[in-house]
Length: 201
Image 1: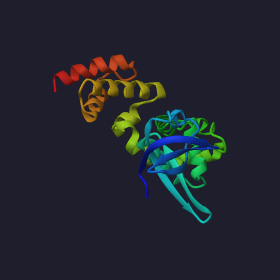
Image 2: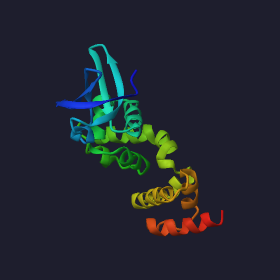
Image 3: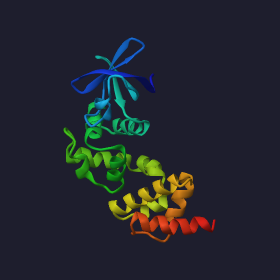
C-alpha cells in the first residue's frame, strides 16, 4: 500500500496523470480540479495515493494533500459511492467545501458532481455526518452547533487561521475564537475579540 509517491509529472491521460518515480511511470487517477495537472515537468511533487484492488485490476487514485485523501476514503465508505463517484465529487468540491456541505446539509452542492443525484447526495450527508463532525476544521462540537450559516463558519475558520499565523496553536486559536463573544461577526471581529481573550489567558 502506498501512502504517497514523490516524482515528476511526465504526462496525462483521460482522468489522470503519469508520475515518474525511479524510472517507473505510475498511472494515477486524479480529480479534474487537481493542481497536479499544472505541475511543471521539472518539478517534484508529492501525490497522496489510494490503491484500489478489484477483480479486473489495480488502480491508483491520487490527491494534492492528505486531507483530500481522507475525504476520498470517507466518500467511498458511503453505500453506492465507488472510487469514480468519490473522485467525481472531489473534482467539483474541495475537501473543505465537502465538510461544510455535510455540516450544513447542503445536498445541492454534492448534486453538482457528475453522476451524483439528489438521493445519493442526501445519503452522503446522512452517512458522513458523524465522521465529518469529528474532524471538521479543528472546531469543537459546540462551535459547530453554534454556527448557523456557512458564512459564519467561514469567518470562524479564517479567524482561526489568522490566529495560528500569529503563533498560537490550533487548539488555542479555536478555543479563543469560539468563546470570543463575536459569534455572527466578521473574521476581523472574531480575531480582535479572540486576541483580547488570549491576552488574559
